[in-house]
Length: 371
Image (cartoon, rainbow, N blue to C red; front, side):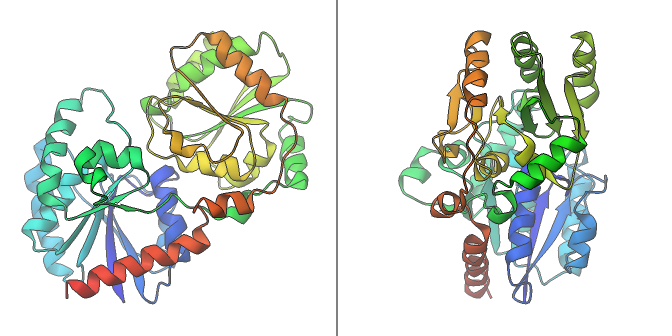
């Protein structure tokens, strides 16, 4: 058995982490085992499941540049104490260079950078991220990606043009998300949504996901449809800020905050449409899940077009007039028929039962070449 060390933020319910857990649950763990290098001390929602499946969780001193000497010391010590690691895979965006550099100086032969984002968030950390991104090529030796746009962002056009990357889709357990009328009725009845038009969103409350914009659009739409409800699943640092905005707009009874839930698949059944107006994305897992449930999906045009798996996907410019977003919602809510999208999702290579074996075999090949 080989062990693959994944560098992440922490193992909470978010896009990258959910993708990793989907693969983890479906690989043969007698051949490949996942361990997780978490850069936050906060416990993750998946921690108990990881430990139950035989995985280990390590906590670094964090990715603060000031703490890099202590981070590097921690990593060198960890690799000395765990010589079984021959493969490390970084999922931290540009800051993934921390783990990859530490692995390189420690002699770890397989250093995978897994590209997830199609752009880099323009916040106060941008100069640090750009500097880290510049050092990625010297420290990684395998290019994994969730999509072409993410590969172009982190590997560059020349790498993509040469096909010097490997695509591992953000695959899902398709059968859990296929439309089910009974589940829909149960969730809607339980949450007072029986006769409502329900707009859904799943995502961490952070700048990237653009919740403030989403609430603004919903406020405008609710002028046309007083029965509409906005359901927000997730948690994050901006949760209280968004709640305050909802309060100021007088929408407390129309915007429902559910937090992190363990039945996201059931909530997709209850939604009537799905919105993801992100400032940027790679290839969002939630977009795949929503289309597996055959939901009409409205994305900002900054979300990669690769996510358009069904004909019900629509993209709108973030600077488009609010009326354009409102009209798109009206159109989406008129799409009432829901179908079984198993074949569609599987044919597009997003069925985890088919894709997990491919990733597993690639790890085994890389390990064999470097022993």
